[in-house]
Length: 122
Image: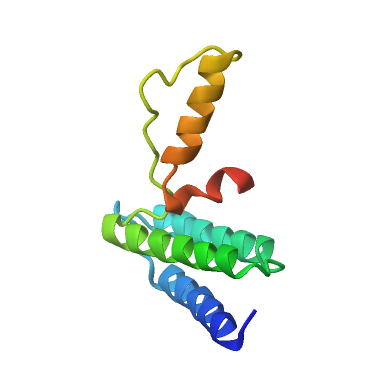
């Protein structure tokens, strides 16, 4: 990891924790705010620790872009949780056969950048 990339990653890490510290839930209830703050911190720790050994510059850049996208979406919608994606047409194919493999390929292609790592840790 280059010093510039390391600095960018550490800056994002600090930014996420500053956001979590100031976070207010959309409902305005104290217990919701606490739960969402804990979720943001837990999610950040998990993902940053999971990706700490990544050395490929392209993969590092993709992780940085995912983090930035999740920050922007979370701040815009005031929801810390990843937004769900919609299944492509015929999303409920049988669990076997050519149609199922095609649907799996479509799901993988249609997955937005901000959800690339979400299924891996859930």
